[in-house]
Length: 240
Image (tube, rainbow, N blue to C red):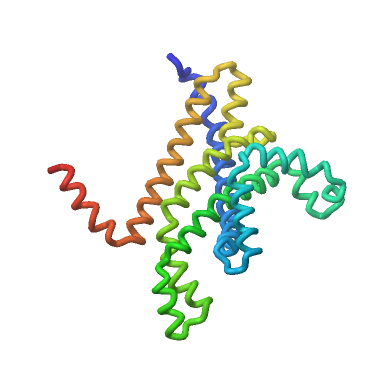
């Protein structure tokens, strides 16, 4: 048998504790990454060339760099600068958890910014011009016309990004954080059984992704009423 049931029962509490750390990391990264991505996406679509260049450069760098490289640069690279060690930020940046959140958030922001920028561009220009023609301010046009439609258009792509964030958190065990992957590795080092903890961790990752996928599907149906009407018709066609 590949999995040792006795070992599995014994490691469940450790894996569940690591799962909570992973979920906490995902929550922080998604919030911070989105807050970074939104202004970058707006800059990516700005009329001013310097802003567009900044947005494109940010996306190119942080979407293209492997998340493990970013993590090592933040965790091992920043302490090499004396002015960082002497700054107030060093109180936070000396903590592995904070470094992991920073690195993962920058990586997530690179992907999310491109998703949001594409969604903003996909909003029909005629609707924006019509809203401005009736006297709506730019802020109200963005809030009432652009943002709602862009949210619908970006939802599926952003759902994929959340899946990537969940899987990307596995690298934080490389900087001593005991997340789900770190807990599985710790069990492996203590028991010399690589299959039981790693397979169990894989099942937990799959469960988290499955729940997320269902949640995104529910949001899609809530935001696109036509999908609710189309689903029964598609089911009947397949069954027929």
